Length: 88
Image 1 (cartoon, one colour):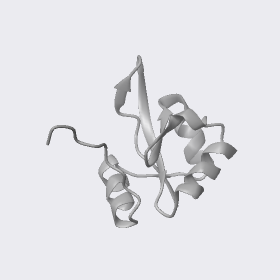
Image 2: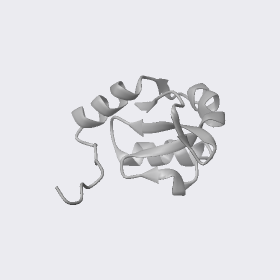
Image 3: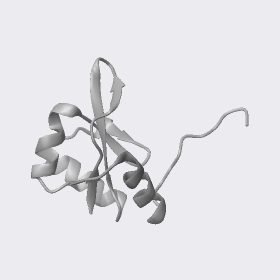
């Protein structure tokens, strides 16, 4: 299933959502490609999606969830790739 959280992350003068699959990276890549999300939006285990794409992603079938639910789904599926911690 493709999941998307609400646009809440501010960066580069925009708000961003995260779009991910709870099934496979391949599913996320296929959904993104089919819906105009560029490959450069991929960040380890999800796509960063500008807020102005949010409604279109939901209309295309992405399921709206909270940010917490998205992370829990990725962890549960064994797909979470957290950022490396340096110096710890």
